[in-house]
Image 1: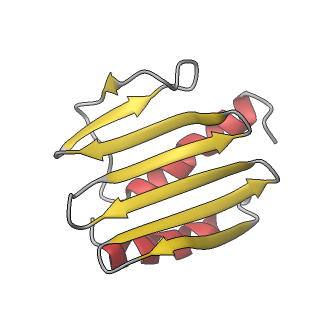
Image 2: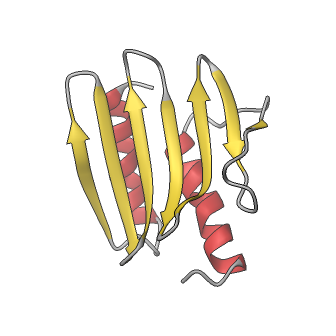
Image 3: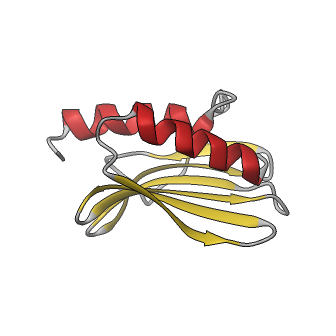
Length: 117
């Protein structure tokens, strides 16, 4: 994913998802971008994109660390399941062409199902 594509999708997602309180660009370089969607005081979604490596990391983060995540590394997707976020679960189906939006939709379901907000 190109950095500008990630940035545009993030701005669009900020308006689409009711649980996002604020979006902040945590870091931006010539080849990387880190965006945080603030949900609550100690709960946020972090998006990391590297054009150089082709890596895209999406994570729901709470007070104890990663709660759920999806990563694209070396062209292959994997998931960090909500009930075992330290593990890697292969996801050969990958993500849609709008991975930030798809991930935030998954996060919305998890937030509601687990009473996180």
